[in-house]
Length: 359
Image (tube, rainbow, N blue to C red):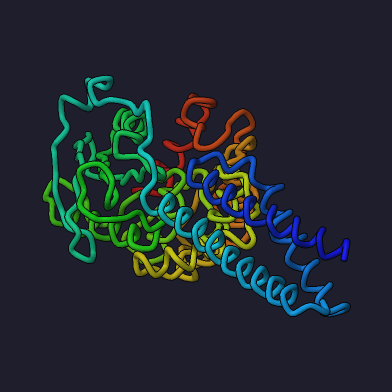
């Protein structure tokens, strides 16, 4: 009987832990729930199930109480798993906006020539951007990072514009001034890039024979996906990209929410797929990069990146077919910091890469 009293006490504690865990996740303080979730999922319910199996309670009331607890525990498990999965999907497809982005006014040479442009993504979603004509008609598309806007790429635009290139910076769907309801981590953003290329090819002041693409973070992954989808892209620069959608969701749980990837990340992906009509298996830059060859790819990643592991870019580079281009692990850089942490070498390498492959 003492065991049953202990199990009953554990059951009550488990219910409190379950409610506390969900409340803490919703409040955004998920770093403290690991022990709560572990205790709740791994201790009381399995212990009680084992007790019932090995030594069923003689009293009908105890049996009913035990079965009621197991049913409640299973239900709460589903509530917490689906709740965390829903919250994870919400954060993934509707991220907070990036802070402290550069401003166009900080780049007078760009501001003097910038043109506000509007065009359609491949699926018809209306996108907003800036086109800055350069000394040459050769144009590089600049793809911003997750949660950011085209302003994220102003330092890169300035760098390439000074080198003579025309540049197009635009907001991915649901970011900045572009239409759209959700970020899709590269799935529909690939079509945004293809729509941007179709728009550029319609301009008389742009060389339609081939484009460069430079992207960071989500933009870096999307640059690879788009490069694999069209021969119009002649050279790809990708910084801090993820190897797959599943990989970035797994890492996000561990880095931002401080929860184990399993079982929460797969549920998040499953829910996000159904909310925005995507398929995670079709967002795999590591697999798609091989289709870019023989066009070159320059892969770079901050060696100190804890948001997306440098191993992701190493895997992408390893999967590329010859000629692979370059792989650069930037020693002093964390996530998408190459332009600030290694400014001179960063600029020299990127400009030299585009000069070599965009004729």
